[in-house]
Amino acid sequence: RRIDTAFLLSFTLGLATMIWPYSQTLFSDPTLATCWLLAIFSFLSYRDTKKGFWLGIAGIGIGFAILGKIVAAYTAPIFGAYFLYLLKYFSNDTGNKNVIFSRASIIPSIWFGVPLAVALYSLLYYNYIRYENWLTLGYTDSRTYDMRDTFFGFNVPFLSGLYAQLFSTGKGFFFYTPACLLAFPGLRKSFNSNKPETLMIVSMIIGMLAIYSTWYGWHGDWCWGLRYWSCMPPFFLLL
Image (cartoon, rainbow, N blue to C red; front, side, top):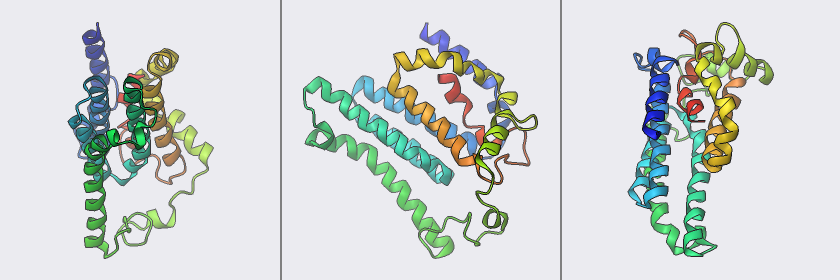
């Protein structure tokens, strides 16, 4: 049954969402989807097997997403919170109420934290090589060839950007990926059966919506559909 569901969701994702056309591009956004799916799969594998290397793979997926596009860093606290939940989850088996701050958390934290630390250092050092400043990212600091990011930045009214991303006739996410509307009738069941995972995915979606609702280039032109959201369809379908 689960294999049938997985096949149906994969079939829908590949043929009825923006993933298909964007798989032919070199945009970073579809790569984010791959990295985040890898992280979620690894977390769930760790939950089921308690093998630490799965946390390492999750850290690699999250770290590589951040290296691919700095906006992906907003998911680090979300995944970090789920990691803490997993530590607490296993504490129920051992009876240790303070497992997050115990020796039992050291090895899992190393598995998860080292890849993230490597990714963070690589990003900061790359900034230093390019701009001679560890914290200069090249978007809103007047150091890029495209000065629009500096001049306009986050200047769109939030509600206008929110509506435009989801329902505008030219770029509305649900016009280009109507299959993702299935997430809404399934959300309650998903929440009741997998509350922590549902909260993690919903937080990712809300975070993406909040970031780009005020960004002047929320539409991601020139492209087909809402380019920045081409990484989101898998997570709607998981709900």
